[in-house]
Amino acid sequence: MRWYENDDLWSGFAETMFPPRRATEAADLGATSPLLQFAPEARVLDLCCGPGLWLLPLAQRGYRVTGVDLSPVMLEHAKARCPEAELICEDMLEFTRHGQFDVALNVFTSFGYFAEAKDNLQVLRNAYSSLANDGQLILDVLGKEVLASWVGRPKSVDVEGGYVVMRDTILDDWTRLRTDWTLIRGEAARHAVIECFIYSAAELKALVTEAGFQDVECFGDFDGAPYDNHAKRLIVRGYRRD
Image (cartoon, rainbow, N blue to C red; front, side, top):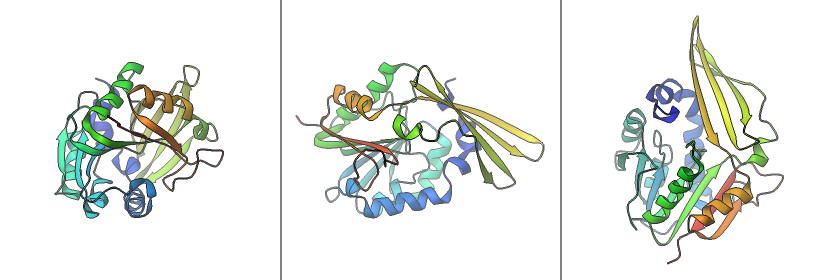
């Protein structure tokens, strides 16, 4: 089993991965971010939608939303949060719907999950295929440049009845990131590992371009700020131009 196929990970650590502040953040960004303002009734695909944090605010703005996730547990939460969304249980490595969407989102660092670099490229190619002409991809990750400023420092997050310790390790000459999660409640401990590719702005921009996208740009946050030494995120936007 590949790490992201383990539903115990998503259910067991959901309160750490998806705390209430993230839902609030998604709602705020959906209302204010210039990168998330689309044409009326745009068809928006959320790849790795998780519990639907982005689906609801986008649906409330009148967009037609579709969420894709491999976790049945997460899709149950998404259905409860946003009943009007179309929800599909499928691996993003396989999912494609030719020309059916105007926007493809992949947010909260849900990219780079696959052990083979070619598979991560295939995810982008699938997104390209799923977009209509002039459709746009918005990809949101933590870039290497941002990670370098804090990675390696253990973090502790309080949860109900206990706490979670997170430890990051850089692998393969800054190619991959391993994060160890340990949930401690009383005398019980649960452990999980996440591993993913990490990218600089130049690397991810080149990968998105290789997948076929044009007019590719990088931003340092959802406010459209440049990707520079003040960046908080690495957001890449590209368009399908037939």
